[in-house]
Amino acid sequence: MQQELTRLLPSATVTDAGDLASQVTGSVGNAASLANNLGKWLSAAALVAAFALAILLTMAAVARRVREFGTLKALGWRSRRIVGQVMGESLVIGVAGGAAGVGLGYLGAMVIDKLAPRLSAITGPPTAAASVSGVAGKLSQQVSSAATHTVYVTLTAPVTLSAIGLAVVLAVAGGLLAGMFGGWRAARLRPAAALAKVE
Image (cartoon, rainbow, N blue to C red):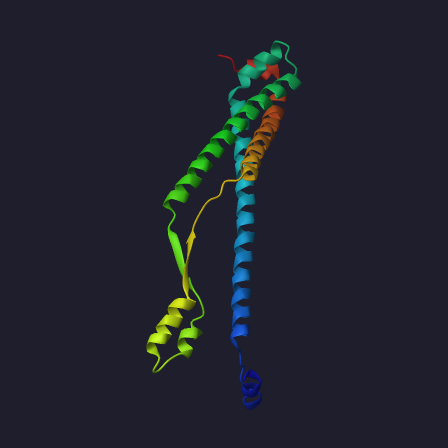
């Protein structure tokens, strides 16, 4: 029929159910790809912002402890030991933050699983009921109810071991990175300048 209509109406665009299905599938695929890419970029931006915030907070903490590090340097501590001290503190904070984040994330996933709405969709070919019409009205209803069924979809937030491991690794990496920058700042302190601020 499509070929016959194309022959009779050469200037018209004739589409069938297959063409329409491929267009819809392509649109849905493009939307899913766009959402996936957007999610990746947003996750990367949030990760960079979290690392930058951790570094800034650690450097601010080192700046508040100028007298402490100056005193330790005056007592003979080497820069390497002070860097190790700052990195150790940042590592402990990173591990504690990772554990707290995993706990809060698991709690959030449980809340989503409990409160998420249940979606439903009716599937089946509507043409089966439309083809039987006229005198056989009851038969149409029977074919319609037999050909369709309801599918329920429950929104979930799955928690996997790989996601937990990745969260802990990123928290530890953020702590180490912040400790490196904070330790570098602490190692540059001069004992005389630091002790000059002692009241």
